[in-house]
Structures are given as structure tokens and as C-alpha cells.
Image (cartoon, rainbow, N blue to C red; front, side, top):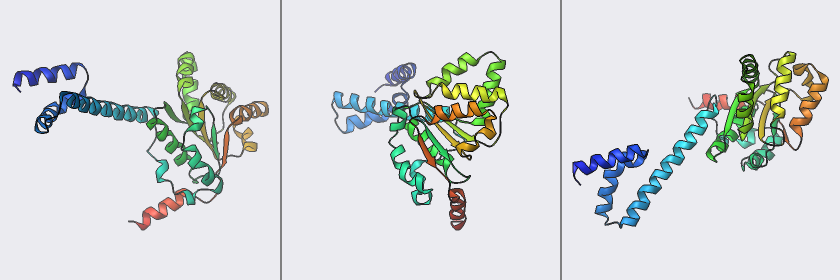
Length: 252
């Protein structure tokens, strides 16, 4: 193949946004000639590799855009170290049927028992499956809502927030809210209820949620909306995080 054709193929592949082809077409042509591949087989191979690369990049983009604080995978969980209720449910959650059906998961229990690991692991699995995911903490979500209200961009935020297939709202219970924050949180989590999935992690039992929202009527309404046709997982148990730390130290 002449240098002129090389340059033309490279140019067209770049213009058509075919990153695999632009980088590897010379190697693939050489291999096709060596193996005496048919035109059909060569074309199929290069298109398949282009498709695989595009799919892989799409998954990476979904994971990056989800804003996970770190990567944790469901496959890395030591199931036997989880609280008993979680042991029975995590495998079922891994099918992602709850996302397809727009159901919520509430992981409630004392700190360090694996709530965030499960939530992030399910979130990454959902990204790999092609779903759109957002990870946020409850305090960060409240701040974003307040800023959007101040900047008069709540409608834009609402439109984007409703479209995620899965929202993970971590750390409910670590700080309490003023009336404005409670109302905003109630409104925007309620928008998703029964339509799109939300995973909430909390260190407080439901009877203590009033400590966060202050208003008993709003608290009752929030619990009712979030728990309707949802999965409630009792995460009270020994510290999963402490077991992970001890295992890590033993390997040093």
C-alpha cells in the first residue's frame, strides 16, 4: 500500500471518528494479507473491533460521568462478611432488575458495614449495562439544590435529575437540614419515586429520620414515598470496613 493511500485512510478514519481504524488499519491490512482473508471477513473484523472499542469507551464515560468517589465492585464483596439481610439480597440486586423496574433500595445500618460499597458496586454494574447513573452524597445534593434555586436553574437540574436511570444518594443522617433543604430534598427525591431507581444509604433507622428533617409530617411522607415497592436492607452488623482493613494489613 502506498504512503498516499495510508494518509488518505488515516485522514478519513479520523474525520469519521473511527479511532481503532485510524490507529491499527495498517496492522489489520497486513494480517489480512498474511491470512488471505476475504474482503467480507476483513471488513467485519475491523468494524467489530471499532464497535467493541466504542462500547468500551461509552462504559468508561458513563462511569466517569457518574462521579463515583472511588471504584468498588460487587464482585469484590466478601458476601459472608456482610450483615445477614444483605447476604440474602445482594446477589438478587446484581441482576439490576430493580433498575429496570424503577424500584428503590434503602441500605440502613451502622457505619462501616458495606453500604457504600454495595451502592457503588451496583452503580458501576449499572453503568456497564448501559444505564445512566449519578452518585452523590445527601449533603452535596442539598447544596446543589440550594445553589440551583439561587441561580434560578432548578428546572434544568430537575430535568437532568429525573433522567438518570439510577441515582445513588449516600450518607443520609450525618447532618440535619433546615426547612428549605428538607423541602428541596423531599421534592426532588419524590420526583423519581415509582419511575426511576434511587439507592439511599443511611446510618439511621426510619424512626430517627425526623432528627434530620425536623418536620414529622414531611418525614412520614418522605419515608412513604421512598419505601413504596422498595427494598429495605438491614445493614446493622459488624464493621465490614474494619475486616477489610485487617485483611489489607495482614497482606502488607
